[in-house]
Structure formats: C-alpha cells, structure tokens
Length: 87
Image (cartoon, rainbow, N blue to C red; front, side, top):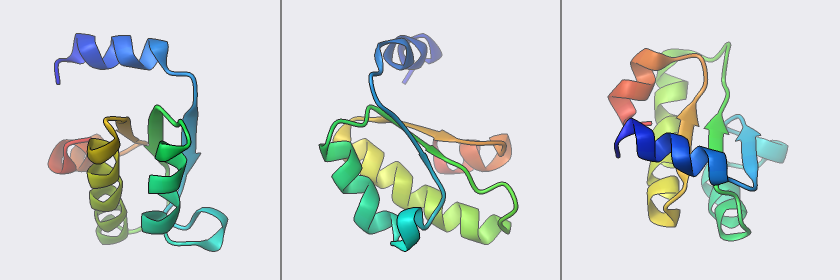
C-alpha cells in the first residue's frame, strides 16, 4: 500500500489499539482478531525489550490478522523488522 494511502487511513482511524504479544495475559492471536472485528482500525505492536524472534513471531500474527481485517499494522521502534514482516 502506498505511503500516502497509509497516512490517509491513519488520519481517518477512529480506534487505535496498542498492545504487546500478550494483551491482558492472553495470546495475541486470540485477542487481536476480536479487537479488529470490534472496530479497531489500527494495531500497533509494542515490544520494546523483547528479543527479535519474539517480535518477529508476534508481528507475523499481527500482520496476518490486520490483513484479514483490512486494518493498518504498525510495528513500534523496529523499522528493520517492520520492513521484514510487511508492517
């Protein structure tokens, strides 16, 4: 998706969810699809101190869920992994 389209969608977003890989102690794969179905337009994965492999695994889950819901996916603080997983 072109950068201009991502920025426009971000500007129109009404609900922006920020979480790590265990929101509320539950697996991201269980929580994120429900949040997206409930109206979240954008999901930001935030795992500042996690090892690369954990961030990569959670990012793959998030990218797939966001793609299915046509939501934007943002990977916080890791442009290298964001590019790798397509965030």
